[in-house]
Length: 222
Image (cartoon, rainbow, N blue to C red):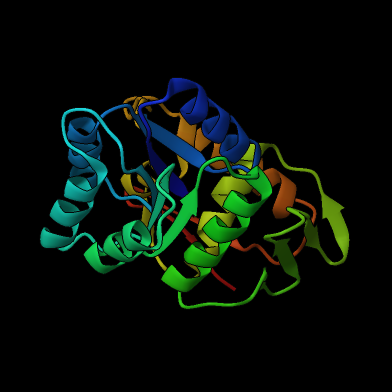
């Protein structure tokens, strides 16, 4: 899952980015409203965390313009403004949720999970295909009840595959959802990670779940 943080306080942005990356999310950061608007329009995100008090273009204008351009990505407003009027204005402009500073990271994470589930129209916390399961809360992955150790990026990659079972995923689609803005699309990194993942979830089992479509991409199916 790929998240955009639009926050001009670099320490706050770094704190959120580090925490989300530890939770296996791919994270991009913009430090002013203009860059945030551009990135929100040009890239596909699963969630946007948006501060209201931003330089160049303020957060409400960024929010309004994104919604005018039919960007339906869930948007969580994060700001020091805590009046009821400010909250109502933000929600009426198109925000999906509102969290005031200072905040506990655990609450931010819980709100992010709710918004991501809402955006996918799902309430389950465990993804499953055949005997392979992925727990979205504990991050435990098991096949045939045997726990499989994955790196953070392998976990993110598997989650994306499992959320899109039966769909052909191109390398571009994978890069946009699992890697961040600085990813070099001219490398074979995606293929390398897919091979590592396949060895862990498929090699020791007779039924293969992750398949390659040569010249197209990958698909996870029974």
